[in-house]
Length: 190
Image (cartoon, rainbow, N blue to C red; front, side, top):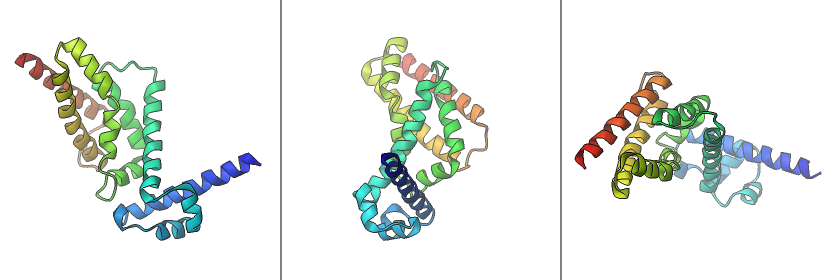
């Protein structure tokens, strides 16, 4: 009996998620009502509130699930991450296989912080690595990370939106080269 309840809950949450993502194609999250989501999903408001406190909680769950998919893909990857290229290729694979959702999440109607949050999970290991491998201070390693991630966020957003017409391999390679150049510039200053 519990598995039936779990399946029903999962199906309901999937319908609510699909409804929100569909509505985000048309308007911003702040313009979407719970009534619209429920009507599109074929559920009542009480059902919505039994799972979520508000629309942002639903969006947070969608984004969190997507983020977990990316993190677990990287965690189970057989490849050792030794470069930005090694990090980006699996992320780009997931982005490409979830193109519709990514276009919505990265659109003007989506959550502007999502892509930034996605890339920030690598900060601790990158900072530690740069301090030990490049011999830079912790402050310089953080500066380098924020500089690179700012560019990476906008570059990946442009890629998802189709503004960059290059292969994922070429994008990962070029971004890796840019990171190496930024690292060299920082080291040469010290």
